[in-house]
Amino acid sequence: MKNHKYSGGQSISVTIQGVPDIDRLDPTELDHNGMHKQMREAKELQERLEAITNAYNRTDRGNNYDYANVASWGRANIETDRDREFRESEAARRQAARAGRAATA
Image (cartoon, rainbow, N blue to C red; front, side, top):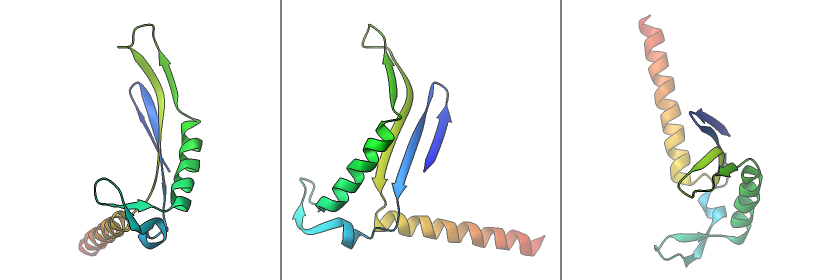
């Protein structure tokens, strides 16, 4: 979970890790973009998580629709294998950089 604060509000991002694509995606169904659709269980898991993060969404609208005061946004997703590989490679790269700096210090 990540909580980002910025001028005018904040956001909450929750990512479920450890669910491989083979357990998350239906190999027999494609969406309109040609990508594999989420299996029913994965979709339900994401919807439950979105319901939790949406409980923290707060938006106050003025009388004019061009004005909105958003105090918090919530976002939930399930990490893909590609995202996991990138996250792990970046962690390894940062660790190697730290080790290199420590060795030269």
